[in-house]
Length: 250
Image (cartoon, rainbow, N blue to C red; front, side):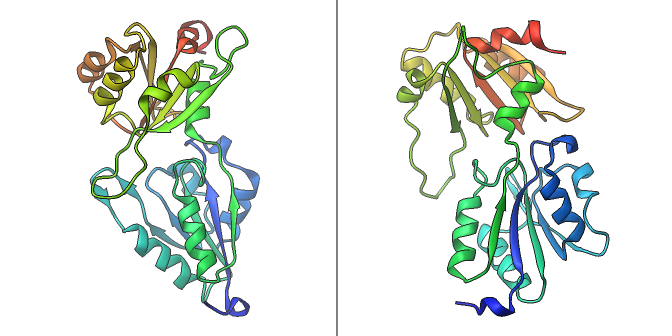
């Protein structure tokens, strides 16, 4: 346990989905006063430009097959930097506590005796569909939403997703990090009884200027994805709300 009297504070800050206009005022203020910023790969350049010019900036990003730092190294780095710096910002894409490993990082910091605070961010599973004209809930169509990760961590324990329960658990399903495993996921959902005609949207680079939307059905989306070479980072939205895309997209 480290002596807290000698430590700075670590802020786990959610950078949101990409559009700098969706970044919180509290997060912006912390970046402007930070001594150290340890940032993820999916944080937009416009948000990185808000960082105090005198701050030390460290890329700890993780992208599929390209990890600049191991998770344990990132945690050790935060603890180390808090020894000699008053304001340490761990800048994470989306929201730290929504598939962002923020809970793990906060737990490690608390166990090490490091003061820590979470600053939530808008998660891509909410923002990206909104920018695509897809409301996750609608009084006439959907009264429930399930958020689930489609990413399987090879060689590490992860609770197995019960896709059968997901298929019938709500009217709208939002899948994070599922593009690489989409064929398997759709097979599981259809095997659980979800119709192949069920609408699905893939949204890439949500809320950014380069956002791309791919609309189809469970039966057609894999062929569409391959034809368009549609790859991560993207989320999937499944359910009748996807049908509102054409009418509501601006």
